[in-house]
Image (cartoon, rainbow over all chains, first blue to last red; front, side):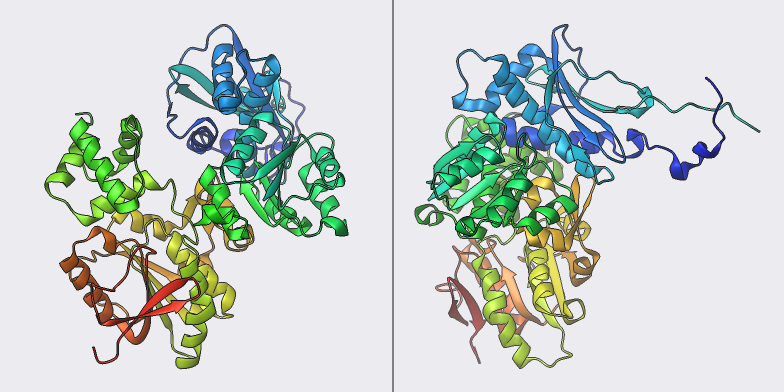
Amino acid sequence: MTSTDTGQRRRSSDARPVIPDLIDEATILSIVEEAWVALVGEDEVLVPLAGDLPVDILSSWVDVVGPWTGSVVLTTGRDTAEELSRALLGEAAPEVLEHEDVEDAFGEIANVVGGNVKAALPGPSGLSLPQVGNAPVVRNPADVCRVDVVWRGEPVSISVQGALPPLPVSSPTH
Amino acid sequence: MRALVIDDSRAMRRIVTSILTGLGYEVRDAGHGREGLDVLDEGWRPDLVCVDWNMPVMDGLQFVSAVRSNPKWRSVTIMMVTSESEHTQIVRALAAGAHEYVIKPFTADAIRDKLALLGLLPQEVAL
Amino acid sequence: MSLTATSFDWVRELVRKESAIVLQPGKEYLVEARLLPIARQMGLADVGKLVETVRVRPDADSMRRIVEALTTNETSWFRDGDPFTALTSTVLPSLLTSRGANERLQIWSAACSSGQEPYTIAMLLDDALPNAASRVSITATDLSREMVQRTRAGKFSQLEVNRGLPAPMLVRHFQRTGNEWEVSSNLRRMVNASECNLAAPLPRMGPFDVVYLRNVLIYFDLPTKQSILRRVRDLMRPDGWLFLGAAETTLGVDDSWERVVIGRSSAYRPVKGA
């Protein structure tokens, strides 16, 4: 680590906040559970357990831009993302789901979860439209809060992750 | 009774539409605010507009302002249905002229309760 | 022990009788999911045990909780709005003329659940009276300790505030904390919550000007209904107002009440000298 810092940055009052200081796993889980009950179905149960994600995964996310800047990312197996989309589309679901159906429905879940995560953070912040694809990379492992759940036996992870790399850290001065 | 549902997500349009048709509404939908204004421009008069906030082309807040600044549409009841749920955002939407605000996620009962408050539950359902 | 067919049928019959809502066969899963929290609160291992316990020794409070858990997702604000409209249109103006300017108005929400009813009353009075916090005291009681604690905390989930709370009232009286909405300290000061079993002798309270006793009596047998109404009456001012649930009445139960129609709802007032 380089040491170009004057020391001023280390004052807690002007340090850039990282997400574990702003929200906890229990809050994220309650947001996700409420979204599931309302969007996917009232009988749908999420079990807060970590499972191994399959190789073929898909993510949907929204970006939050404000005092804290980052993304709220849902990641699950591609098949599970399709099953979720079917649950949202209900009887309107086509026999064969197109990619845009999954983009639409899986993206809307990220929008609902992300909007509520944003509202639990210090504001004001802006919210992007949802995106679907390969999740943004984690830039700062200390700026991540992640919740893992199992839905219908399949793992789904929800990651609230900062968009910025860590600040340069100065070597301790005594 | 007629309702216009504006949301960029087709899945969400379907969810809101099916709740409203279940309550006896005739529903049309649009994918963003501009499309919503086009429907109103055709002369189709809804009793209720349910509008999302974050959408491409024209967002929900711009849509509310556009409707409120046009005397022809002043009587339309507007309900925001959005995941924007900060206190300040709800205040902004009400100040712009939205009558009610439903936070996503919501249940069908939530929509029904809000319509009851607005006096927009079709009579046979209200009984 | 999972839910047996007999237990499921008993629950279906209870819900049908009390709410006119019919649970279709195949909804065993829903019954298990909704009733499990009640079983846990009562210290029972599962829903099968819960149903067996209540079936063998029926008690009104458990039955009410079971029916509510299966018929509503969340308690609504302004639930059946008419009794609240009546409060501001008729009851409050009448009380303000008959009570001295320094007399505190006392209101009782007698089955307050998670707090929506007492805070609905508090919001209405806060909007209607310039000095509501010093003028009004709202007593909120429930049999369940958990419900009393929830009322005291005054915190509601996103799904709960979505249920019939007008958005202008939400922004005026609530602040967001994390994923919850917290009622303002001003309103919390107006509401005092405590445990109370309506079917037993009541603690010293009141005297109340207004009592909301809604969707409680339906779960009790006739003699218990009569003794509850008598005890409630003893805690009310002689010119007080009682609101019952839409499906409830004192008619044919206790003739010491007079029914007054207010708009689309009814209030009951003690008959003088009865």
